[in-house]
Length: 175
Image (tube, rainbow, N blue to C red):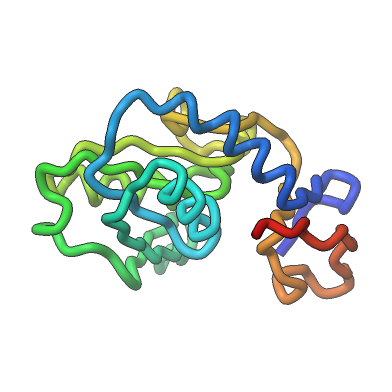
């Protein structure tokens, strides 16, 4: 899964995530009718933002990108998505952990806007050098990076064969 060498990875702790979210929160200028978390990476930051911003209406969007018959075009497949009547006319914040190539976020945003929603996007990290969409990026982001971010919620199964997950200290007691 990781194309970059481990030296190009940045391993975050829960305290690091808290710091990025603390930087992200003051950027929001609006109240939202609902929050849409892109699974799976957006579940943790989305949940934290819902709690911090007192957003009670929460949706998930599960999207995967698969190669088409020509193997030259990637097509998003939505495995789970809020129905149009739940989002039409609503102001939505769409959250994911990282905007790297941007495909997932652009696909989710486009489908929500087609349903009549007013959409803003937020991520913890933005990788502009990996972005497939020139002059497009998240509306809000906690940090810009060129590294592959390993979040505390990433599991060892997500590491490529031959790589072992770097060890990180256990998360601090958050309770």
